[in-house]
Image 1 (cartoon, rainbow, N blue to C red):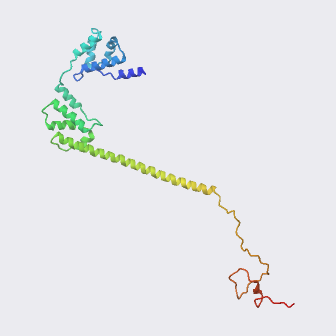
Image 2 (image 1 turned 180 degrees about the horizontal axis):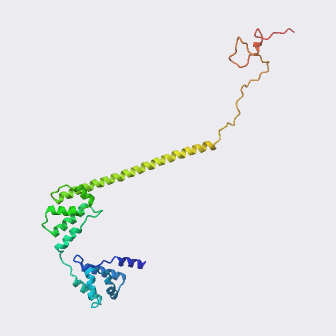
Image 3 (image 1 turned 90 degrees about the vertical axis):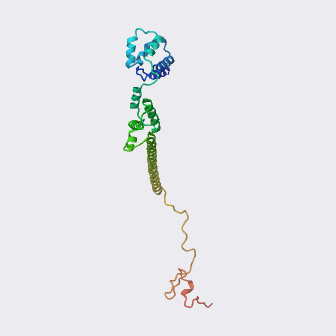
Length: 263
């Protein structure tokens, strides 16, 4: 675990090139701090310092490496060999202006503040037209395309217009994400409804196949619950009986009643 932590510390040690924009004192403070965390002794510090040099600083090291073997003498000599200027030169400010670009996730107000400050450092009397040109030269390409052809009298006017474009783009992106989310929700709902309908149809089909038709356990009622022992006689064709399916026993006699027999 400690070796991995030491490796991370070593990988984050900055390189010193000896260029005017490099501050030798800040670099030495950082290197000394990280060497102390790792646990290097003065001999090891002097031995490994060379791998964090480049450019003019590395050339200086190759010239003085045999004469400066002690760590304390070495850091004093390299600090004197690359004095850091108190104020940045005009040429250095011009280079910073050329290299300054708006970052992909950087807001225009942040970029604007940095660029105007660099313009003022390079030329305190820089005209508004020049500042606007510098701002356009470093802004993001999609923003530059939206503002191309528009004229601005002051850098502040450009700032206001660029912020409006950024706001419009942010709203448009939010609507696109919302629309994409709504479409996804509708698709999921439709799929869920279809699956439910499919499951219901399937369950209904299996129910009809596996559940037998219900048959009552009760016997059917009798067609006629009346016992009759008299002889059957078909009904008269002239006087049909609509009330009973069987004729009355008196209808077989002409007078409507049975004859009386003498004893």
